[in-house]
Length: 300
Image (cartoon, rainbow, N blue to C red; front, side):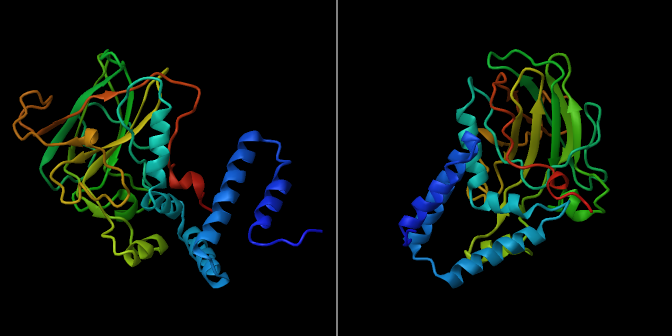
């Protein structure tokens, strides 16, 4: 029997875990234990502080529901989602549009809509047209790519926040045409605060952070033989474009509205053009950070 101290306990845990048969699980868990133990030693963590951390994570779990994923929100505000996205981007074998956060409000089963359809049930604000092409690294069109979109309404709320959970709004699934063209009508989404009524929001408030996300539209784009793209477009004139509380903005994803866009596929409406470039698929999987909340916390 070995008497363990604050250093030898790490080796003892790693020794027991060494029998893990899955090599990737063993690698991840060994690194996790080493870093977690090193963190506790670095800050000289007290038992009371550790229990407060456990209480916080318990509260995050309790706050997660089939329509709200508090753990994804926690990952986002700590920058872990952005970090994992950046690591994923590095594995691409060829240039592609940068990724951004899937976020906690993605939903499976959004309505299939024809090109040019309005995704907001009751727009209540001036319409804009989001359009462009889905292309490969050489600029060739990717025919019939699927383009999933979702955003807040003109009041800064997602449908999961504003409506009965069974009602879908401000989201839709489109299919590009044979030349890779896509377009749809929407309204300018409003920048918004992350949910501040839960444990993650309280943490952000305690850290004196504003908790705001700049105005954006989410995209999930895919086609056979190509790597799935999870990204978002951010509006340049938003006051929080340089201080996104979940670190999702990249300069290559910033767009502006052209109020008199001669190329707009719906004449007379303001346009936002963006061409999405997909990389050919590799063996590393789809690389999403996030999921439909209902698939993580199913309804009872």
